Image: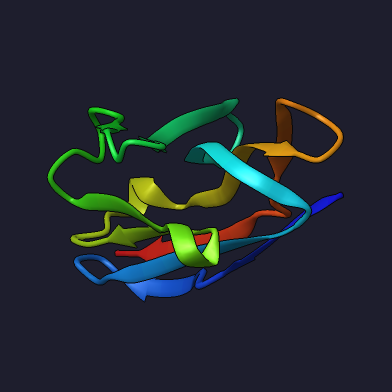
Length: 120
């Protein structure tokens, strides 16, 4: 099995910064993708940023230039650095990874979610 542990959420004021972390553990042979999603109040979950095994990144238009996704392959950890936060970034942020394990070629795992609250 694979477990994800998220950390780094919290409350900040407009213009502030937060750094989310998501560490994957378990019988991981390789990591295909590591993404961050968020669910805004009353809305469906949306992709915020993604990073592939070759470190290619992509971002939602709403966060481009403010958020940066990165990964530490040695630690199977993905980060989301969030700068210049706005109230509309308030959401529950979820980590998502796709990994290969000893038992499955492609296993998708979601984190438990971490709340980010940005006040004006």
